[in-house]
Length: 250
Image (cartoon, rainbow, N blue to C red):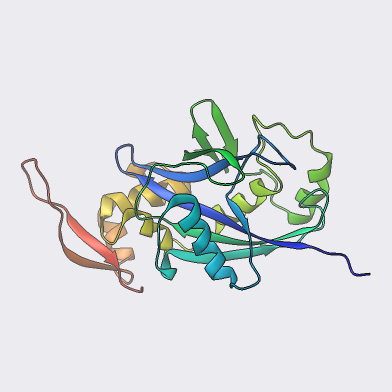
């Protein structure tokens, strides 16, 4: 008899905190086993009557209450390693969703808490912090090595994400970083338009550098093939208003 397996949609949901100039990630605290009380990326089981893309958008609609156009979500990768989940084998179709706003969160079915975690650099790793909670992408770069070590770890809900989500999150951060110069969909978290300073802030966070290390003139020149000027920003203080741009390939 063939072994049964479940197909989950795992959604890496990003937003931007305009007050603190921080990229944010949505994590939920699981209510059920396995990994009860652990923080994790939001997930849902794919239904028989929907595509993976539809399930990813449904997750955002049900968990956050936002109805998004499909271009706000992109497929990341499929994670199928037998060691990625204990018990019944579960395959994960991972997506990334870029929210143009940062709504208040209410934990949905299967979660006891939901929070935005701010992203920072810690060496080559990315960390995600909310108050006393702090998690990081895995420092392991080799997929085989990561999954070999996964069943051997003494998982701690204070420091470890559920399942293989530290690996999925690493892959997500790497994907975004590698696409910054030609398809920076992550900038959708800034809304339909953005200033160059806001774009530089996002780039700096993912590249683990300081904002001042990105020269504004060179940044504008090097990305003129994907940024299109659409006017100036409204402001309440004196001075020359900043120009605003949009992504021209959507």
